[in-house]
Amino acid sequence: MARISAAMKEQVRGRLLETAAAQFAEKGLDGTNVDSVAVGAGFGKGTVYNYFASKEELFAEVLAEGCRQAVQRYASVPREGSVRECLLALAAADVAVLREEEQFMKVVIREAMSFRPQTYPLIVGHLAPYVQEVEKVLARGRALREIRSDLPAPQLALVFVGILVLLFVQHWGSGGAWPTLDEIPRLVVTLFLDGATHAAPRRARSRAADRSRRGGARRTSR
Image 1 (tube, rainbow, N blue to C red):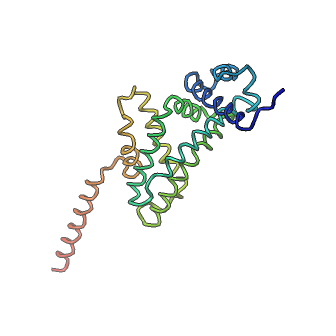
Image 2 (cartoon, rainbow, N blue to C red):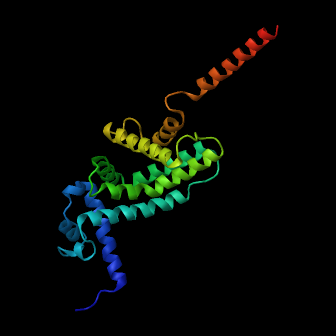
């Protein structure tokens, strides 16, 4: 029997991953069958097991491949500017990644929210590079005193990503009515940095308080 070259093995593996991603997106993790992945990729039944030990490992490798592509996109995000500008760029980059593989990302987020021990650690690993990029921005913001210092940057980064994921869920749940994908980057940054309090009124209240204190000081001096 002729031996398969390393290049051919890599090509087969790539076709299996591509087909698996499409089937996971269409059928979900539970509905996908490894033999159907092999046949869909143009190979015989059982081929998947020559490259992956289980369906969960296949799913993990699809996640890893998506993660590698996403990291390349995140790496192009500017690191200069304010914390708000950098977070906005990171959120926009994540939305761009989601647009490319939206159906598959629905499966990923659905699996994350199911907290299944077989898949949840895989999802956390998949998100780790993005969470780390957010963490770097927040750590710099703490050093510049733009970000609160009573919570560690890793925890704040998880909060940011959590808000982003919930907005994706709301987008899908509303049929795309609200928020739209275009609205999500600015919305997640606003909610994360400002919460439900509008920045302008807060500044106005602060100026009013300053005037009140100055007025009180003048009256006292008299």
